[in-house]
Length: 574
Figure 1: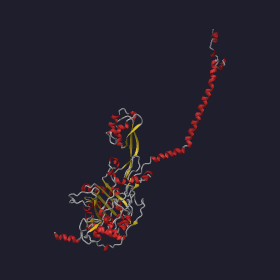
Figure 2 (figure 1 turned 90 degrees about the vertical axis):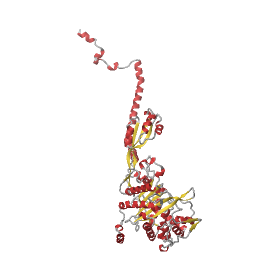
Figure 3 (figure 1 turned 45 degrees about the vertical axis):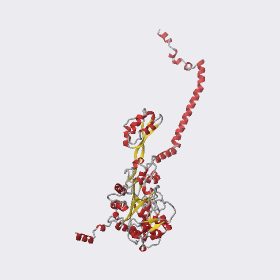
Figure 4 (figure 1 turned 120 degrees about the horizontal axis):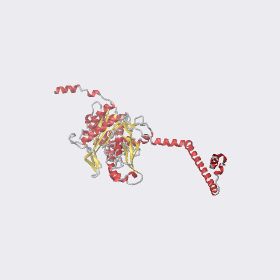
């Protein structure tokens, strides 16, 4: 039984006795189907091999042949991401830098209620109003930008709303740590990071391409002082506008430049163009009597001798139907110094007429007063004259500061040249080692000395007494110019530009301070007077008292020592 049962096993049980190829060889219709499929399998196999070859070749190309191109792309990205260089003052004080901010976007597909989202976002700082947001958020595709350059605090407030679809993109933004300090001089950058105004604009390429800080000639301490005293003057005398400039005369360095109204650089786009205007270089004024030292210098350069000047100012002076008068009656005849001390319009006009229109124009050109101010700022405005005809009346009126409107910066550069032993140096925002300033002689050393001496008498004996600072040997000149009224086609008697220019020490001036108040108002402190001796001059004094020690300016201690004769007289009077 056992032997028989073994014969009943299946054919596969005895593997050695079976030819396996016969088991898996198709027959009939199956064999034909397999024969038809073989070419397709072969074609598919060849396609897979070809694809593998292409991928391998591309990988090799990326790894080997594109290395230079990839490096170029990385280099370009590095250039684009190069932070804008910082701006510092002459002592290294940071004036402009960069901070981390974010642009904020919302994916429209994630918005379920545009009105509700716009309302929630609009109440946050740094985000536009509800209507603007609603307009931006409307739609179903892409994403909407709802804010630019938000600060970490603003970003957190948006994040805390926990709204879906909100995205933040990090970027570096310009930041001004001192807010409004030197705002008009520094300027600002646009939304794309390019300089739009001021130093940011004129040095834009340098700031974008070099990582090294840009060092300005500006002194933050002096700048703060100028702005502070300018604001005090504005509060007391209530002008429409004001401006001030402080320079180092021998090098032309601008240590401070300020305008009022002022503005915060970090929020410049929330202010008006009037606030952002740098009046020191953009606004031409008829400056009035501060021009008289220039007129005296022209007369001396044209051949007059200081000791020979003798002008009868009581004699009537009428030109082309216009009578020229003096605001304050003075002695007659007047010499060159008297004309400045008593600020005689008649005396200055006769000096100008004696110089002659042709020579006056030539000297004005040499002083730089017929061109925009010699300074890097591109917004520097050209002078203005109602007519290019150089008539006799124009020659006379320019002599006492009317008929030619110039910017404060242009005037400062011109007078700085006259008092700098006769050598004019262009104004600059940069330190001497960064600026190529070539001095040009505009008057003789002797003429310069005569003008400085006369200006010193203005401060000790004339209308500039309220600008004197004992120990600093201040020289200066007041200017109170009536403003032209286009409606009446004549000069207004109750609207004027008040200014004072000072240099110290007068023997060899190192520093110049200029203050201008546009339409100051008289008050109790000035006994109703609106003229420079009562407002601009005291402001200059306050500035010099504060910046003198900061700049370590030459100081005469003996000037503070009481005169024995004065002490004896005081004891006698007691």
